[in-house]
Length: 226
Image (cartoon, rainbow, N blue to C red; front, side, top):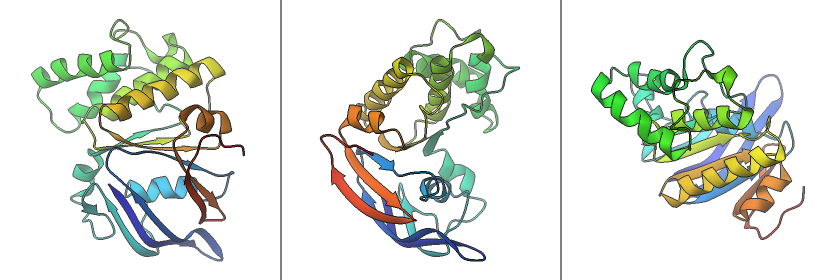
């Protein structure tokens, strides 16, 4: 569950990235956040992952009040929120298996657990036969699947996808959208940030529109056109 109560993010000298935002996203929902560049979408993701603090307001994510969270607890909180990025953020010198395993190694997870869990998430994203390959040997769509697998490695309650199809062609975009839909159907809350109207139209889910840092629309869409 995600709740934002009168959340404002102000950057000096005179910029409001978010202004008095109120949102409630329920467990198990699939929600798209849309808007043109500079409307506050990226700031919203950074605030929801405790990368940045709001200037005003309260934010509850998965039971955590992250406006009051201690730095000590931030790593624990982030394991409950998986994040997918537009540019994949893969380690080029590591294999696909190693890229995903790394997220567990930094938490001190035992090797036997890593050897069990990594193949499971690779199967979810359809890459179980490519674990020994390197990112450069995969297509863009496959690299994004690795990014999704890495985001799922801690079995997060919430998955934040920040423009996950921005670098992909139409076919790979459709495949990633369907994979996110599948993950949502398995019980994970998905928040998809995008400016791609085709992605929104494929999903036909709840759509929150940001403009100049404000929520200007929040509705269940059959079809949306930017």
